[in-house]
Each structure stands twice: as C-alpha cells, then as structure tokens.
Amino acid sequence: MLVLGIETSCDETACALIRDGRVLSSIIASQIDVHREFGGIVPELASRHHVHAVTPTVTRALEQAGPLRLEDVDAVAVTEAPGLVGALLIGAQFARGLAWAIDRPLVGIHHLEGHICSALLDDNDEYGPTVPAHLALLVSGGHTELVEVRDLGDYRPIGRTRDDAVGEAYDKVAKMLGLSYPGGPVIDALAREGNPRRHAFPRSMLNQDNYAFSFAGLKTAVLVHLERNGAPRSRAELADICASFQQAAVEVLVEKTRRARAAYGFERVHVVGGVAANHGLREAMTAAAETDGFVYSSPPMRYCGDNAAMIAIAAAIRLHRWRDPPPLRVTSTRPLVAGLV
Ligand code: KG4
Ligand code: ZN
Image 1 (cartoon, rainbow, N blue to C red):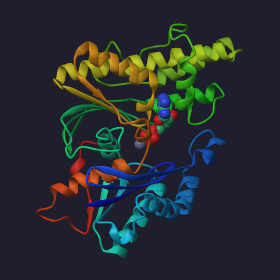
Image 2 (cartoon, rainbow, N blue to C red):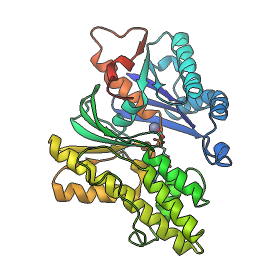
Image 3 (cartoon, rainbow, N blue to C red):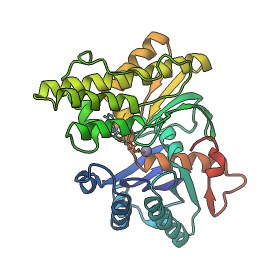
Image 4 (spheres, rainbow, N blue to C red):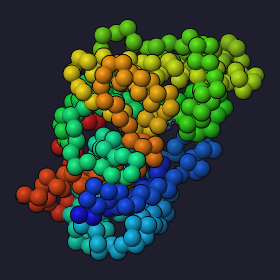
C-alpha cells in the first residue's frame, strides 16, 4: 500500500510517500528563514507560506519516490491536530481535495501520534508494522510529556509540563542570548564547547514525587543571570551558559523518565519530537539505558523534527488494522487518541 502523508501543523510544509514498511521520499520545505527575523513563528505568515509550498512539496515527493503519479497513491494521510489552526487548515483542505480527486480514503492523524510513530523508523528508512509497548518522552516546541504507550492508539499521559515546553525554553533562552531561531540546535552546538558545571541553574520539580515538568523557572534563572552579569563577553562565556542550561534541562528530563520507566515497568523508552535531536539528551539517555537496563531509541535525526513520514506511518498502521471493516472515505482519528492533547 502506498500512503501519501502531508504535515503542515507549524512552520514546515512536509510531504512523504511510504510503501510497505519503507519511506520512499520525505520532503520538508522549512519556513525557518521566513520566521527567523521575528524570533519566533508568525502564524499568519506560516499559513500563507503553506499555501505556496504545499503543491511543489507534494510534486517533489512524488518525483523523488519514483517518479510516481498521484493515481498510484492508495491513501492520503494528513495531520489534523494539534497545531496552528490556519496552518493545519491548509494541509487538511489540500489533502481532502487530493483524496477526493483520486477517490482514495483520507485519514486524519494526531500530530503527537505521528511523533510516537517516528521512533519506529531506522537509519535505512525502514519501519516496523507494530508499535511496541513503551514509555514515550515527547519533547518538542509545544509539548513535554511522558506517555504510557501500550499500542497504537492506547496512550495514557502520566505527566507533562506545567508551563513551557522544553523546546520553547530553548527558543526563548536563545532569544535572550541573541542567538538565532530556532534556538534548540544553536544552543545544543554551543553547549558542546562549554562547561556544564559553570552555572548552577535550577532542576525544577526534580525533588517532587511526580512526573510533571516545569521549564519556566530555568528560563527565568538564565534571564536573572544575564541581568546580574550582563551579556556574555566571549564565546567561552556564552558556551558555558548554554552548557549549564542544557545540563539542567536534560538532567530533569532523563531523571523523571528513568523513574517513570522503573515505576511502570517498561522495557523500552522512546524519545521523540524536535528536542530528541539534542546531543546532550541522546547521550544521557543512552547512558541511563545502559545503567538501568532498558532499550532506548530515538528516530534518526531527520525524523525528530516535524516531517510527513511519521504521519504517513501512523496512517499506514491504522489502515492495515482497519482492513475489515474498511475505513470510511474520510476518517478522523481524534476520538481514537483521547489521551493526547
Ligand atoms: O517537533 P518539532 O519540530 O515541532 C513541534 O512540534 O514543536 O520541535 C521543534 C522544537 C523547537 O523548539 C527547536 O528549538 C527544538 O525542537 N529543537 C532542539 C534541537 N533541535 C530542534 N532543541 C534542542 N536541541 C536540538 N538539537
Ligand atoms: Zn512536532
């Protein structure tokens, strides 16, 4: 079965084609350059750019996958929520029109279910047909949460951030430091040069016996440091702040994940979402897995951030299960992922 996926929930216009456990193409038209001068995403601009980018992105994905024709596609999948409303609408309406034109089913996928499925992908662009039971740590620009995943569609969130998402904290701290948007990759790179023990930034909620997170205090601690000491005067000083900030964020993420994993008895931990690309987090999770004896996996770097392959995979697994009875012509899966917000 050939599934075409479309993702436009935020600032990436993405299209992917997958067939029988393999990604044939995954095109991502990023709008980062458009939003960079504003230091964050401007929703109206995002919508307008999706309108311009969606047709060429789908065309490129079809070309790169074969070339294939639209008529070869067996089903269309699209992110239906959550995300920027205007941006989501562009992808959803485009996908609806496409499915109607070729008379194929349309499956709406929850963005977080897509991220959960991204961990099924390996370096060779191949993915498994089932979702193994695991504890998922979802870390992105909009989410930070631990989810008990028993199967595709069987999600129980056990803790989430009470304020900022961790990716949001990275982006805001980067802005304070005069670094470019998105801040995550920039801080991550600088952190590798710095001393993570130079500044003792807070490990919020680490001493609390729950699985909730908070990153607003950490962000404020960096702001207070800058107000007291002024902007960093050298690259080394800047790198120390980045390394210390990253150390504080990663320590809390890893420690709470370890506790939840042990308490819920999972053998696997999957870390997904844009922040799963973070080197510090990947290294700390690898070390924790070795010490505690669990299997840790994150998607290849190219599938951590928003992409359409993860949306197509979620739809492919669902379609496979729905063979009997066949899916409706247009299927929203929102009622099936009640635990995710
Ligand atoms: O999953 P994603 O592409 O979009 C959302 O669904 O939010 O995640 C984007 C977030 C941004 O906040 C970005 O700064 C962060 O992921 N990010 C990183 C890294 N790469 C991207 N954060 C830390 N380290 C990275 N290497
Ligand atoms: Zn995302």
